[in-house]
Every structure is written in C-alpha cells, then in structure tokens.
Length: 255
Image 1 (cartoon, helix red, strand yellow):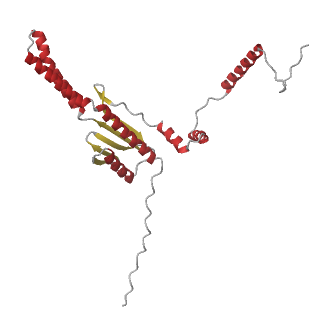
Image 2 (cartoon, rainbow, N blue to C red):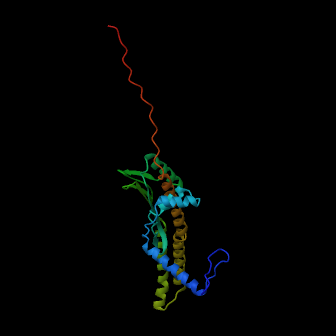
Image 3 (cartoon, rainbow, N blue to C red):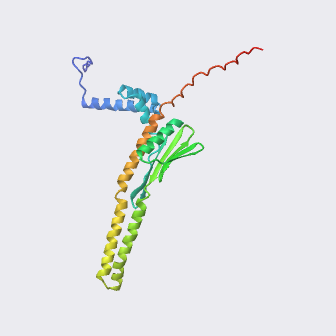
C-alpha cells in the first residue's frame, strides 16, 4: 500500500513531472471556464479611471483631461502642394460656450501669438478673427462651442509656380537645339540662366514651408490646449451689482 504524502509545510511535497503537467492542465481549464462564464467587461467609467490614477499618484483632473483629449477631432492632414505643406488647421470641441470676456481675451492672445491685429467679425452666434489667410472661427454646438483654426501660406505657392514656369522656359532652348541639331552658345547660356533663376525662385517659396507649417501647427495646438483648460471650469460669475437705493419720497410742502 503506497504511503500517503503529507501536505504539511515540513517537509514540502514534491510533484512529479506528470503530476505537474496534470495540475497546470487542470488550472488552465478552470481559468478558461471562469473567463467564459464571466460577463463581458464594458470598459471603465471616468470615475473608475480616476480612482486607479489616484492610487498611482496621478491627479484626477489630469486623468479627466487625458480622457477628454480622446474625444477631440484628430488634427487634419496639412494641405500640400508638390508634397510640401501649404496649409495647416486644427479643430477643438469645447464643453461649454465661451463667454464674451473669454472671447475678447482670446482675441488679444491671438494678436500677440500671431503678431497681427487682424479683424473681428460677428455674424449672429458665429464669431471669427481673421488676418489674411489665417482664420479662427467660433461656432456654437449643442454642448458648447467649436473652434476651427486654419491658415494657408499665400506667398509660397505663387513663387513655386513661377519658379517651375521659368524652369520650363529655360528648358526650351535646350529642347529646340536638340531637335534642330544646332547648339548655339548664346541660346544655351540663356537657357541656363533661366534654369538657375527658376530654381532659385522655387527654392525661396519651398524651403521655408516645413518650418512655417510646424510653427503654425504648434501655435494652434497651444491655443487648443489653452481653450480646453479654460472651459474645464464653469464660467466666472458676473460681479454682483450693489443694491439700488430706494426711491426718495418728495419733500412735503406746506399749503
């Protein structure tokens, strides 16, 4: 009759390879059964996420801000011309409407950020600040306001187009000489001069586009973050007016 093994702490039981394989197999089956019987998780609420973050030392408002960022529209792809960014934009959804003082403060910040006075326009519930091709539009939504920011580099495309046109004219003498078989030094010289001029004009318009687009995108991202931070708190209460004095009674006059 085999001896019965003890499960006490001393001595600790040792399992054979076959027993270990059987134990892990049975445990795996049990774990799969628990998963199949458990209800499917529907995700976690913001409060639950904030509780988890609080245990990890992350402030609740930072968790809420990160969760809100998931609801923001993804930045649109920049408009391109010949593969180069010619225009950028950003849209941000706000949880509440901007007050008149907040909009006026935003206009002041826009003038400082973009170093331009711009023009303010009101069209019913719609507002906008524009400076040439740079447009900041404020429009109402069912829950608050939507801010659309967009701009286009108006000077780069004409320079690039003109440069390509001059390059094309510079190639004509070489093509004509190749077709006719006559190579004249003066004609080739004019063509070379046009090629260099066109390439320089194209470069003036093209080389500054990447840095310009990156700077404008960073500026718009900073404005969006600032607006999201402002609208996470309720609008300030208007200052209370002092109580008005009761109307004075007319002085009595003798008859």
